[in-house]
Image (tube, rainbow, N blue to C red):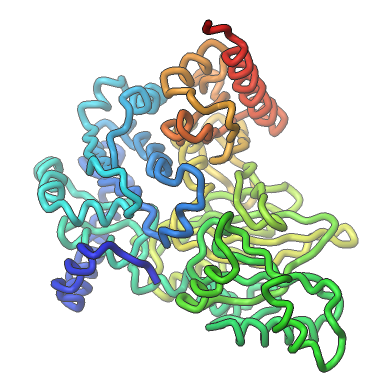
Amino acid sequence: MLTFSPNIYKLLQHENIEDNKQRFQQLQNQFASEFATIFPDKMALKTIVVIPSLTVDQEILTKVRGHFFYEERLLCLLMLLRMPRTHVIYVTSVPIDPVIVDYYLHLLPGITGFHARERLTLLSCFDASAKSLTEKILERPRLIERIKNCIPQNSPAHITCFNTTELERVLAVKLGLPVYACNPDLNFLGTKSGNRKIFKACGAPAPDGFEDVRNRNEIVHCLVQLKKSNLKLEKAVIKMNDGFSGDGNAVFFYDNAVANNDLEEWISKKFEDQLKVIAAQLGTSTFISKFETTGGIVEEFIEGEIKASPSVQCRINPLGQIDILSTHDQMMGGEDGQVFLGATFPANEEYAKELAVIAYPIAEELKKHGVLGRFGIDFVSVKENNQWKHYVAEINLRKGGTTHPYIMLQFLTEGDYDAASGKFYMNDGKQRYYIATDNLQSDSYKGITPYDLMDIAIYNGLHYNGATEEGVTFHLIGALSQYGKVGVVCIGSTPDRAKAYFNKIIEVLDKECKSHKETDYS
């Protein structure tokens, strides 16, 4: 359950919810009819309104360092301006530094920066508060009118966003625009409990566990049942229905658990001591309180000496067509690898094709429910006796950490992922790979401005090179000076080349910061 500001609660109370839903569905139906003719035509007039709002639980979101700057992740969509009659309206909480915008426009293939800039409109709420961007926009009726007035006359238009809630639906109706994403009425399918129901419906292999768990007592009961059914089980994971980036999870350790009828009493007494909450500074009592508000799941923690966390990115378009867009191996951190840090692309060739085969029926099941847009399916994979065994872990009915890196690669190279081979091919048949992260972070990087980063990249030959179609692209650039954190996509013609770029950017940033700190300013 999301919490909103008092102003938004008042606004929602004055909205006719059923009328809003009907009008929204009419807009979505209109989008489907436009999609068939407009989207395949690169020369067609169209407008994309980008609302990169992270409309999720704000207390959990504030545990993500530099979350405010995550609105910059969808700047990858400025690459749509490579189509000469496409317009982009990009709305943010605070203005984006012009050097960051110039950086993205410089990457555009086949279009001058001036031509692209003429079709780009940047709007801001001038509001640095912790509220979601969509809340801020809804609080500003004049800004909503300005967005509408910036859409060229007779231009078909739609909204793209990070995720959709009732707030995005209200905004879509006020703008009179469809959204290329899920109807928020379907968001229950993207909850952890909804995920497990989808997995059961299509027979996907999932960890043993329980959904629709509501409170501490039920968590304890589920932990008891899991242990009794698998006496060797060492850990279980507890997930809030609406957790984000692993920060809605906690791990329960069965260390020294009794193996008799006293197990339930032991777990109940030791619960707080044996529970490790993933989100930094989110205490056990706060975690349980939030869990009891949203509900969630309890399931076994999958162990393995050789273990991976791959994912599949899918899309269902308005015509109902399913695409397997990509596979990744996720880099995980935090307590027992529950927090997403980055990814390598494509996923391991030993199982990339298998992941697509498992993911497709899940996408078909979601299609039956009316799901639209991009979503990710996360796996836990374990290698035993030289064979990989895959467990579906969760579905993210939104854009995620692998969305923007793949969009950058696809738009820069004009290539596509081939699910049948598990490889990414450009038009000339050459392959490309990358390593991407949102979490290249060091306190020593604090103070590096966007201007500094551009200088560092240029002087050290790290910019993406359109001629060789290799190099480094940056995102979350605005977060670097304050948080010492930046995102990178390191693209190479081989996995080793991509890794070399990744290592080089770390080496260069560390060297530059060390050199700067050793300078005598006296």
